[in-house]
Length: 384
Ligand SMILES: Cc1cc2nc3c(=O)[nH]c(=O)nc-3n(C[C@H](O)[C@H](O)[C@H](O)COP(=O)(O)OP(=O)(O)OC[C@H]3O[C@@H](n4cnc5c(N)ncnc54)[C@H](O)[C@@H]3O)c2cc1C
Image (cartoon, rainbow, N blue to C red):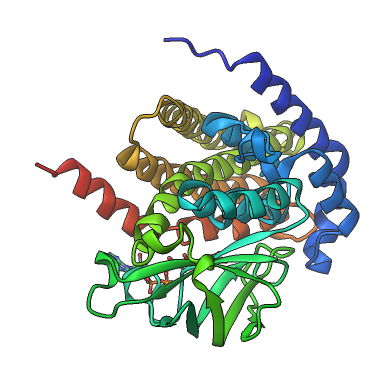
């Protein structure tokens, strides 16, 4: 086994680490308070190529591979989670459908714009009646000659308000649904009949907006079907392939935040004095630090291994769900222990621990809840 991270990825990791420390961390509290990322910081993320991590070089991306992407996300989530979220949908769920199944024409048109960060992409699957049960979407696209007419509402769509392009899943055959009756469309901002509705008020992840998308007789040429004519009805398969990969990168996000919380907790435990000595000398506090460190170590090994497997072309459905389940649940346990180690200060908004605690809670819910990950893992384990 070779556990060395390749030199090129290590250099990338160091670049991102410096960027986080110098440019992102100093404004992380400002982003929380203002609920927005300053445009000049988004521009710096563009300049670093962060919008094109997963996109092939021929389209202007960095083509880092799964492990490389995970390493970048691990660094980026050591600060306010909104920064990662701003690029996350473009690199992942928003553009991956086009990358995996798009026509040559769609790839040529959209991927360079997304890779450069000129355009942001989002992914619109969830609806009020269809969360975990994604096959139950009600948004419908009816064919009229060479166009589809889209009607329906999506909700909880990350980056919906800043997106220039949305991957939208709609029912094209009510009888077939997930078995050939759901189609993925590339819908551009400004298409008549497509508007952004309510921006949700959330527990955390301030600086990243979660929106409603409304389709009211929105007319789309057949050319906007992701993959073209032959992919009509195949969109659910595309969506599931997109989400498979997201499970690994989500694990990396949880891992980065957990590592940051451990680092903060160790520093605090060494300098906070009670009963005449640093609280790091108390065995109860040591136990918490030890458990946090052990879980983080385990999470990192499984994440890197699964990412490496995927980069070798292996199928990682079970492993990706295991990574998302373990890393996100682990990070929430770590966040809870970090609040405990910080005592009352852990509950105060003056320090970032409280923000991490709220932001991390989301990771167990979106891109497939923990319960859905367990269903996937059990299904794979019991498959004949
Ligand atoms: C901040 C945020 C951002 C999001 N961004 C996006 C986005 O960009 N694009 C997008 O399409 N969606 C997005 N989502 C939606 C997200 O993917 C869904 O919230 C998630 O899939 C869960 O669906 P739900 O909220 O309807 O919960 P439900 O599916 O109603 O689940 C409620 C509870 O029931 C459990 N449950 C449901 N079915 C089962 C089952 N079969 N077995 C066991 N337990 C079950 C769940 O695990 C959960 O505990 C986002 C959500 C949030 C909160």
